[in-house]
Image (tube, rainbow, N blue to C red; front, side, top):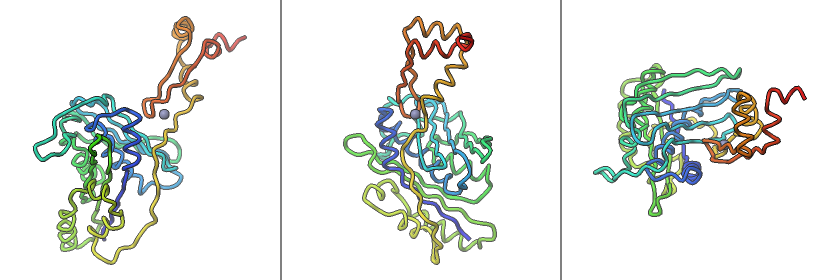
Length: 280
Ligand SMILES: [Zn+2]
């Protein structure tokens, strides 16, 4: 009758924050988007490809992206990680203001053949949770509730990050929907609960009435799947004139936008990428 997914992304969100040297509000936006991608990954089949979620509004953060691979690797990026905004009057990080509105929230899924399918809605508040909920209602048309949160500690680092989604499946009686909605309303401060060591199982128990049928937990970790060969392939597509420029610069350094790993290519590497070089 009901389906619920709970995720914790605390460690991955902190790794993302450290990789991007992100200020708290930027880290919170990445963390909430990583939780969104993790929730969507719960119904990903083994042979499916990646899930990529993007929020791009008119706020100072610019583009924010989070991705999950079929092996449970997760990565994220934010265009402008060094954004600082005052806390909201309720003491929360101003994620909505940082992401902005007048933009889109997009979910891309890759199937087993490598083809991408995307669904997109307009940003509602930029808080990510509201936007994800709007996406679920519009694109998937399933009655849902979503709560996402990221808590930043005294040192400015992420200490709690996660989320819960609950959906009413077709045929779920009205009373059960109402009861679950009331229970869900009591599930406040998810990031604080996770920071204090609350288990995902307990979060689900707070939302779903008994009996609950459990699916196995799956683990996710911060890990980027960029590699030197893929970046070399990209350099090979550059026109010879651009490659000549890189040679006269003495080489090239290409930095991955997701994990900030810097790949070095020296002059002889780049000479081998020239199309004319293939003839030698
Ligand atoms: Zn990378």
